[in-house]
Length: 142
Image (cartoon, rainbow, N blue to C red; front, top):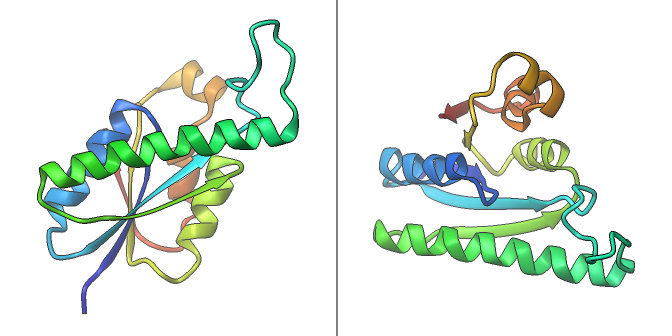
């Protein structure tokens, strides 16, 4: 039976490192790259700082998510691997933990910036919360 590995991905270098690690460390496994676009993160406002309409926010979020998944597919192709991809809109920590709990995966590989002290407290850490809440094993790549 082949393992299924979940790799949450955003547009950061640690996420790319996590995907590369998963592809190299689990060559016989099925890898799913999962991206969560959080429309409340402030990146979806117009030049005047006004919020867009909900439909516009969702369309922009889906476009951003697809760009992340396309990058993941390119990285996988460089390794000669086909991957599965999935995206959703929501809160990253909650969506990732829910996906881990779906019962479809054997492990999760997630990137982390490795922040410590005040920056971690102030900015939070998706990877740390996934480690704390995931019902499956988690590998953190820094």
